[in-house]
Image (cartoon, rainbow, N blue to C red):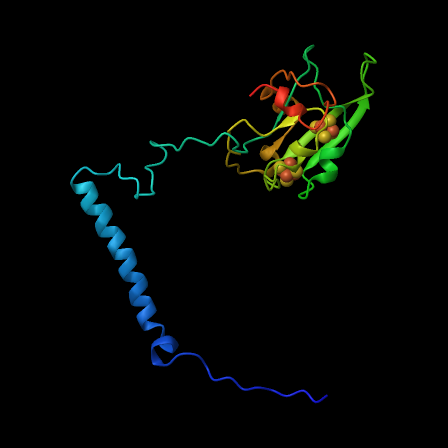
Length: 187
Ligand code: SF4
Ligand code: SF4
């Protein structure tokens, strides 16, 4: 079957082709918001809810419950890291920013533990998949701390000690029990 070409005329007339009217409309919206906020400030109505800006850093927005901040490594009851170096998190990480070198645990209670555990927070895309993948509640992102600006990439890499210093004891069952095992964990 022969292929035919259907010619379609360009949409719109002078108004759409020059963009002039659209530009003026956009500027009018900006000007309207500018005047509304300026007049609101003039009469002390700064706290109106339709003004979306904050005077950061003096004013800070409260983070929601499920905000994803810097990672932290959780500890067991005896203070040891909960991570058993199962390699689930580096496997699932889409940014390949988790480096784990396992070693044998000396106490024999668990098979492995991480000798090196590093996360490059600059490469991290904050997807939270590592937290979801962990079977031990060993890694969380609920610190509500932003990754700090750095001049050197090395400064953005958190090592095991830094990750553990942000962590706390977890009351979850090691390895998890049932599909809702996270509900037993501390907030
Ligand atoms: S939050 Fe996502 S990108 Fe960041 S370390 Fe975890 S899995 Fe990787
Ligand atoms: S998924 Fe959890 S236990 Fe496994 S390596 Fe990552 S932090 Fe450790």
